[in-house]
Structures are given as structure tokens and as C-alpha cells.
Length: 129
Image (cartoon, rainbow, N blue to C red; front, side, top):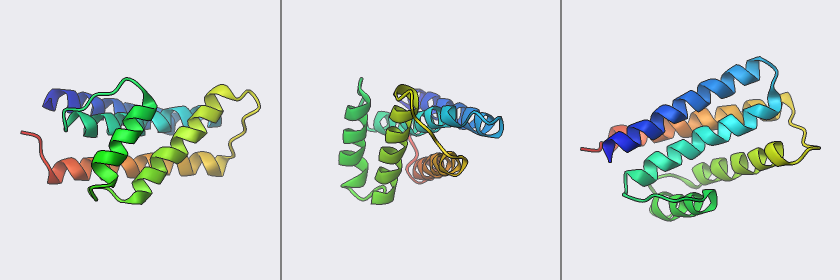
């Protein structure tokens, strides 16, 4: 279980690095994808720490809410970050008319960093043995 969590967190860090690179390179729509996946990998790590694995994004979001929001381990703002980034990624990836401003992309990236830090803090306070 610990190795799986570590792999998810490594993927999350790589996705954050990618999002930052894309943002600074002016690839604004692509930021939505990588920022969301950084969060998704964090959610995957959190769920894996509980022995939960899902195949669909919606199921992962629902289980995250059930196991981490409703129990108070994470606050409601964390759930909003997940939802907002998911919606932005869906739009950026599938809507050929999608537009994302520089400010919106920066917010998605900042929120992804915040979620990553919340996840790291959670694991520091709740180490997997």
C-alpha cells in the first residue's frame, strides 16, 4: 500500500511540474489538464491509503468526499478545489470552443499546489506504516 501511495504522489508532483511548465510556456488550456491530474493523483494516494481503488474519476471524487470531507479529515474547500479543477479540465479537454484566461489557469495551478500540500501534510500527520 505504501508503495502505491508513493507512486501516486510522485505522479502528482510530475503533473504539477508539467502544469507549471505549460503555464510559463503559454499553453494555458493544457494547464487545466495537468493541474487536475495532479489533484486526481493526490486523491488516488489518499484513497489507496484507505485500501480503496476506483476506475472512474466520478467514483474517486465521491469516495474522497465520503472518506475525507464528510469525516473532517479535509475541509469543504478541498472538495471545491477537486470539483472546480475537474470541470475546467473537462472543458479544456473536450470543448473545442473552450477558453481559459491566464488568471484562471494560475488559479487552477495554485489550487492544485494547495491540494498537493494538503495531501502531503495529511500523510505527514498520518504516516503509512
